[in-house]
Image (cartoon, rainbow, N blue to C red):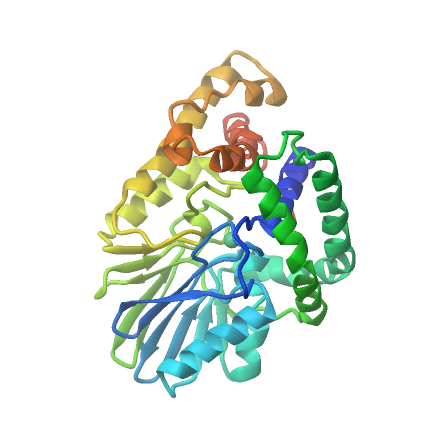
Length: 365
Ligand SMILES: [Zn+2]
């Protein structure tokens, strides 16, 4: 299972790095949206833009600025600092990271450089994961971009993507544009220093700061075992981290046994604005329901297949996604391929198999 998930992650990582299609002058930029007075979301407007990075949200209070997620490269942390400084003279005092994945926290370096007294919070699982994997990542970064360049060149040369599908024009443009950004990514990787969160909490932390009320909650395991969301009860704004990723879900190692419950708790908040971990801002619960339907259809089918005694591989191959696939892809060929890579390749099905058989779930690094 780990091996296959590793392969899936490899594909996702590759696709992530080169998910662009539409060349941007600045591959690390956020599009800033003011969601309410003093509440700013840094959105990766095209979620497939190279490099594929998480959104960030900050809240200005009379006593300091509270930030949720910090982007995946030092320069992205620096971009957040520049935006903060353009709207307030208050320092960033608190950062909370939604989960341990690098695309949400390797930008912390830029925040700490500007505001050395900042406290960085995470769920204990996330803090431990960041701490225990930092050496591994720092070693891996040496070969990361050269390997991606090699794979990219081979894909363009053969006109086949990593899954063996002929490249459609949009994907070819996407891969070729990706090649143009690898130098910038390589130089950011080289200067990355790991920043480990300085404080943890298990269930909830509520900040009553400078006239604001800001909640951070662990609602259960979904995208990882350390997911935190940010909720602003007065503004009715929720930031979900990668529990919600759109327009196609990125779920390398989902906890399908709890996921639907977690999505239900987010819906029950009664939000007016939802900032996903990847993708554009949402204003209703339609996409949350779609994610629930995906987990439910896979879990229900898996229950029957396991009861019939099928092996993990056989059961995974038999899952039928037709009840939800078109609601994600709307027939778009590019999104169809992403749905195949991210979902149909089996990470959700294998997670559901683990739940049905009591197999221990692990998160690959
Ligand atoms: Zn992410």
